[in-house]
Image 1 (cartoon, helix red, strand yellow):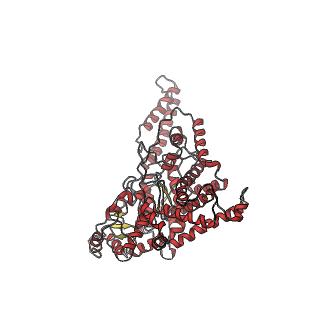
Image 2: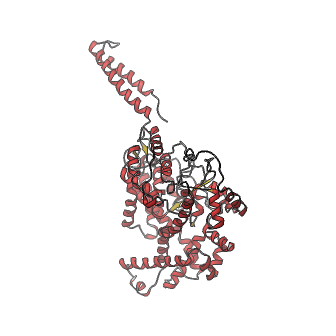
Image 3: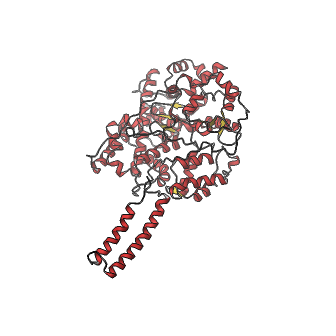
Length: 575
């Protein structure tokens, strides 16, 4: 039984060595705006036109439909509806998480960016490096990106991900002793795709791949849900057949009747697997969440480390990451003296150790349920900021999967007051795309919304077991030590430390410079207007009385207005 568990753990936690991030911001001051726009368009067309196949207009329309509700709530500093790169990067991350639960390396919001790192997707820098500097730097930083350009950018990333799978598929063809130049029949394409799935899910574990593909019995008995995965592959092939029948291409009639498939056909199925795999695998994520929720006695979205390891020892092999690995992932809450060390449920579900597929460019993870909740708020607000009262009214009617009978959350006085505290530094308005609001959502929906650590605090989602090292799995002694602490009274107040992990540091995921005004600036503006009116009244009086330094009414007017203006320019500003 222990050997079986070890094999399964190896399969589920198999991963990769990530590439080192590169920086792309350069000085493009010599480039003019027209040239920049042309180069951006060229870069997008090169990617979208890979292999002579352009992305279908229907696909672009689908992307725009998903992005538009989010786009409407993104702040535009210039008011022209265009977003800066930081905002576009945030939109791109959320788009891929919403549609396919793909965590694109380089786009993680938790990643701390510096002067040498723009946070570009690593796959983009490797595929079209000669255009990356132009796309992300220079005058485009000032001009921003339109919705159409954003849609093209997302389509380009999708196409690059699709193309990146070609190398692995070609390798599988060679191992199956099948030519990529010849069409294959239905049994052959299923064999190729099943082998591809093993390679794709096992990552860099070459020895494990060799054993599994060399012994069908071991594969079927030890690979998680293998028979279901075979049915999933068969379904993707049937989907291809249906789509090709709906839109027959020249020369395809014979292949359709004979059941023959080209390499491009197989590649298209692989692309469908990538886009839909998380939806297929979501039942595993739901099962894992349900087990964690059962251990969440306080309904705080947290499980004591002792309960976590107790279950890992007695019932489920899944809960076995070492304490140090959990800490590095940002999954542990160690802020409560009363509750001790706790595993944060939504952070754990999103962690790299639970991403079932890891490649050099992306991870396929459990879905982020908070995206749906935030999306509903965005749909109803429709702008970058909102008042606490607006948000409380909307959130009070939302439901989540872990509330009994999908009941809305209980918004007690403490949560309502905390939301108003979030708004206080922003002139009474809450930026929807900021860390403090994300933190409030976590405490409102503690089992669905991850706790948003400050950028750079942890390795976050992308630290895979292979990158962490051999000690990613807890030893039996470590599990036993923590499990023995179950039920210990650590003192303190349960009520007082419910939000012990809360921190007041704000981080905005987009450029809100044109949308937020500090309270003292709002007051200063009012005072300035009043002073201006008083000053102008005095100036008028001087004009009427002819009391300018040179006896000129005009000089009197200018000196009075100048004094008022000087006082305004010397007022304090929010940094």
